[in-house]
Image (cartoon, rainbow, N blue to C red; front, side, top):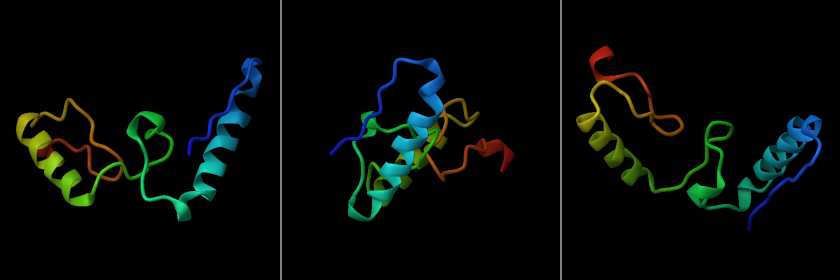
Length: 84
């Protein structure tokens, strides 16, 4: 299932975006995750891979990007390794 909001008047962007986020959050109890391409992770964190895979990805990311140039997803810290 996907939920989209459309508008033609620029003034409607904030209320329509808010509506999409609120209605998507209302569906969370029935969801097992998302298709990554359909989500705005900057506004709402949602699961798109198993936790074990996410942790493995972060180990790889931190090893290959010790300066933290590429951001992490969601609740994973963006603090560069050398600053921890």
